[in-house]
Amino acid sequence: MADILPPLTTKEAFEKVDNSNLTRPVGYDYVDNEAHDLLKRGYFRGLYLDYYPAFFDEKLLISARTEPEHYELGASYYFHPKLQFSGYVNTYGGLTAVVYARTDNLIIVAGTELRNARLYMAGAGFEYLALNYRAQLELSSERDIGVFRASYIHRVTPRLSLGGEFFWSSVYQKLGVGYAARYETDKMVASAKVGSTGDVLMTYVRKISKKVSLATDFEYNIFSRDDVIASVGYECKISKQSTVQGKIDSNGVASAFLRKKLTMGLECLLSASLGRKNRDCKVGLRLICG
Image 1 (spheres, rainbow, N blue to C red):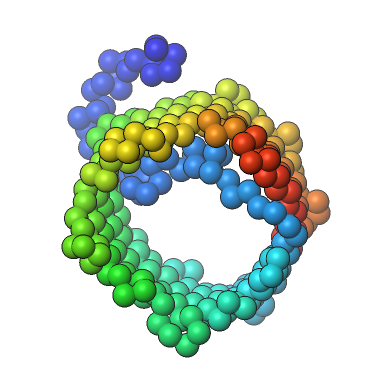
Image 2: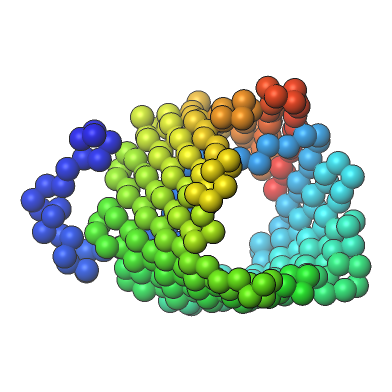
């Protein structure tokens, strides 16, 4: 246990009560970000092509994404490094517009989506960034379902962050709360989330060396007791151009992911997964240019 959670020195224990030494924590939704990036990788099937050319001194960015039976075209314009407008249209009949604005202490994001000429989603989010905490407020409506959500996370010590959230949905006037904790050092990150819906998520990521990291997570619902899933995975940075990830979960699904930079501006992603129970095999290739 001493290696997993190294003890605090006298100096570190004293620094815990000095708020001036506490840095801003990650957002409430990102307390398990390291484990999510390693274990929740979106494995895909088929051939995907992404193209991102830039124009007008890189203020205008055009994006094109080709997927099996789907095509998306988008554009982003940077009026200022802290002000951005983005729009996307796809073959599903969807049209999306997003505005992103930021100051030193405030982030505002507003967006809307039309599908088949009808309003499908609209929402806005506000996030306040302080020295050692951050608070977020979100308002959204999707398919006539309204959602209100507020979250707060505070760095309590140099290593520990604690947070909570409150949410309300117009469906059955549903209310809920959630809590989160994150403990981090230079070599590990541990996190836990629990909500009034009964969902529990615990993650642990260990940095073995500069190139190798191991991760595990455990998901459980207190009320159903049937929705239990655990997974373990690894990440190995073979070189500056190549990274390999792999994982296996309690459902018997084994997955692997390779990211490789072929040349300047060209990147290749190779994805593969195999399920033991249903024998479902997925193999995909994504090329990113830009």
